Length: 284
Image (cartoon, rainbow, N blue to C red; front, side, top):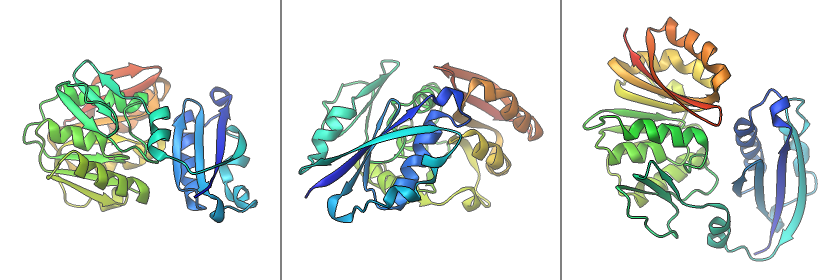
C-alpha cells in the first residue's frame, strides 16, 4: 500500500497570535477531517500521511488554517512506498523520563525499569509526554496523593495522564476527549497499561452533569479552559484540586481572573520553556 506524505512546517509562530502546539492540533484535526489517517508531530510542525488511493489534489483547499493570518505554514509533498509504521514511530518518538521516576515509551521501546512505566501507542493523539504541558502535568501528579481519589482527565489525548493517575492509585477515573481518534487511542492505551478502572468517553465539558471529582486534570488550551472552568468548579469536591495546562506564562493573569471568580486558588505553578501548569484548590 503506497502513501502520500505532506510535511508541514509552522514558521514564525512567535510573531502570530496562535500558539505553536494549538496550531499543530488544529492542523491535525482539519487534515484528519478530509481523510489523512496518521501523523507524526515534529518540533515545528507535523508529517501527515494519506493512502495514495484516497488522495486528490484539491484536498488542501479545505484546510482552513493554511489560509489563516494567525500562523504561517509551508509544506512539501512526497510519495512513499509501503510504510512500516513501527519504523516511523521509532524515528520520531523517543522514550522520555520524568524526574527519574516515570518512563513514557512506545510498545517497541525497552522498559527503562523506572518506578512507573507508561506505554503509549501515540498514533495521531496529543499526549506522549514530549510536549512541555504533558511533562509538567506528570510532574504535578507524581507528587500528589491520588490513592482512592476520583479523577477526571479532560481533553485526555492518548490517555497518558489518566493512566498515570491509575498507577498512583486513583479510582474511579473518567477520561474525556472530543476527538474520535483520541477517544479510540485512549481505549487502546488503557488496555496496553492494564487499567481496569478508567472509563473513556467521547465528548466535551457538556458531558459533565452531577459528577464529583477529587482531582480534575485539564490540559487543553487557554480559551477552552476559561470557557470550561465553571464546569470544572461545579464538579470539583470541596478542597479538590484542579490541574490546568496548555497555555503560556503570559496567560496566567487571564486564567487567574477566571479562577478567582470561582474561588479557585493557585497553590503551585510549574514552568517549562514558557509553558505553565497550575495546581489549584477549590475553596468554594
